[in-house]
Image (cartoon, rainbow, N blue to C red; front, side, top):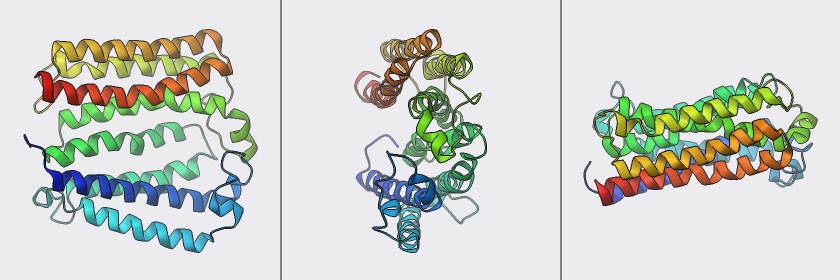
Length: 267
């Protein structure tokens, strides 16, 4: 798709918003008793008793169905087995993995980070698939960038919230404790993320490319983010972990904006 399609964009925003809300709603229904134990989540409607679990479940079910319905109207001709559009299918997969795999696994093993990185990486892929109706190397590249970004992102959050998570019974820290091991994983995955982010410049990928200007900026942004992960490995303290966490919030939207500006203004 070479031109901006307002109907596709609207369906993507509305559908994505509803499905994301549904996934978070189901998550909060499942974790309502655990949320009471953490200061950050104790003020949510379910722990406070402002909403019943049944009400929250029904509301989440309705908005989730409406979201999938909206996304299913994006390029319906490119459907999976004539049942769902690619956009609808990927969003449904994301919600199922988040609710039925990631959410319960958080109380069992830090492997939940890897499982959660899959639905967490689908939004970037979803936008590309909605615009192009293509699920190939280009979509996989965008998925991989956001997949590896989530390791330093999650590690930083788990580090900052370590006491709260343990109090609620969540096993979110790789290796079980703060230290060199989770910080090292953050460094390695940041390096992988940075390399993958410039692959569209280094290799010819159908429907996805970066100019030399875009590649340099994206690489420097990734190097900056990686330096924050290296700092955590060196210092292994809460202040540096918080800096990495905040940097992760900045990196992802900035990288995506650079990709878009490069495509529409430079190439």
